[in-house]
Length: 397
View (tube, rainbow, N blue to C red):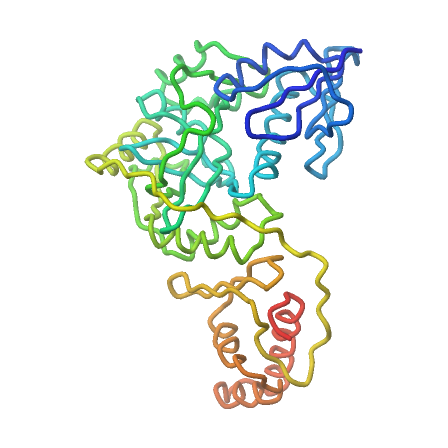
């Protein structure tokens, strides 16, 4: 079978087609705004994804080499869909300046509004509706971000056509349904890709002006924008970052700086048209933001082989931990950059007591004094569990 490689701009590893050249027209439509080159396969080059054809019944064997998941048999549209998902993982592996969010991104008032992915919240449908209303769509599923100095994040266009899940809900406005159903583009029983004309090319950059969390309601609810507490926004952004190889201390620093610079809203809505009008009103009149200058943050890798020891007789904060207060909530990252921990108020208070080496018994006495109505045995068990968790997380030593 003929083997061909597709090299997408900015990605060092190819998408390999092994007897699956028939999907090339689908790739051309779905990735119309992401430049790529098609070459004969170099078997010495490791692909990020492989699609194998000639399996009968129109099925293709699809295997990701950048995600730990089993190979799948797909029809041609789902095969390309699966490859695009792995392409979003391969992109930051080729560029250490990027982290990627499961999110949609749409240009409004000259800046990027990012909609972090909340399951079945309607981000793809809303993004397409905004694009239909004249607001360029950077992505409906993955938004790469880079971080120049100054705290303003920059979003990058993916160059992949948005997709709608089928069948379209009956609750969508009739004119939107008719427009979407009449749009050309690859489709199967599950998805319909809409190669909208005039959308930003891959790599187009805009400063992030705001984050909007979507709260779609089934019961009729007037569309409204409300401010979101900083820690809620932080949890949403950290949860949607899937660039897991990045040092978590660096991720914590740039996300905290980003949230200090960009407002976070929640859009509560039922009706799609009302949601579009609410967003347009909310961002109307805002001046277009300038792209920030300065050197972009280069992310180092996490060090996963760290092995914590047992809870010792003296404990203190490990040198190199990163701590950031987001609103009233403390977030910590270990020196190896393996994870980010959200601290409750009591854990944050104990963390503050551990700036210098302290025996666990001293912490226990402080809590017994602070909570006289709580049995000592419970306090002792709770403090040991907390300290053991912090040691396991690599925060104490």
